Image (cartoon, rainbow over all chains, first blue to last red):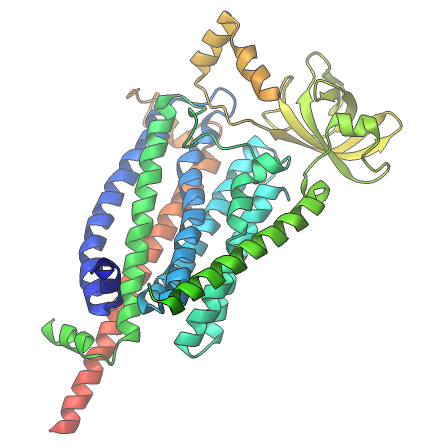
Length: 246
Length: 151
Length: 63
């Protein structure tokens, strides 16, 4: 009884229907939040005393960089659920998050490079933060490649799950790279435990965007999971019933 | 949770923590290579290789920037408030380059000079509107904030 | 806090002197998020359509 909330996730049909509803809410909510946060950040937040307007890239760079790591954490939770409970939906979650995570990591690297040029004077430097983020991108890429190269989905899930867990060690390295080693990348401006190192007029829109990007990531992952679910379960009776109803 | 699942969970946790420790040790062993730059104190102690491409990081010391009016040549001191490194450079400086600003310079040590081939600006995690900076400067609090950062 | 920081719309678009850095980043972000949304929809529809065809073929077979 205690585990029912958990085991109902094992039902693909239950998930497909719930996820459809959540997706709708997430989609519109994130659109609203990101629109407000981005317009606020680009037009209404004050200019920075040193960096001028180039710092406005923060309103995209910081949320996507957060998400690149948070999605890997979510993927490793899925990997544990898959390896311990053999729950299929966890495998589909891993598959979806790998693609979305790669996109967010690429955006974080790309926006960071464009920001780096006017502020640091270079697009790229091999410091610990940038390098560990590049490794994160390659981990996501390896997961996508590995899955594509193994035909049996159960086998692919197991192998990918193990690689995901191996890669978890990269997460604390990314987070603490700016403190453990000397890097060109500056330490975090927003921390859970400390006062932000910027005024409210700058961090409120940033927080709105971080929230918005979390929700848009949920929207994208749910959408991708539903699409994969239909493809994988195409022979099951609930999918056929679903198609007949439409 | 049935015993089989519990066993799998512990196997996984064991593997990940074991791997974490292994990677941690490797990182610790390599930490000198992972660091992007040497500090002026390390240079003064002779920890940095001579006549080899290295990076030095620190603050541009106040009142040491000397620009050649005829060319792009510039000389300045990089400091960590214990030791200084005298840097000469010829080329375009990043917009954020100024006295009191963090920089990372790449180049070679030669004698007691450092010949830089690239100068990168390092900025801190503080963001501020210009009016606030001005107000802080007038009340003398800006140095407190920036000084705290430097340490 | 809610004051528009630029004197005109052109000044906003110019975002002097960093417009050429800031705007491409946001366009890229919009493109990536929009592209992923679109790809999900296409993949989902394709899956449903192939099931539909499968069912139709099955029915033809039976009759």
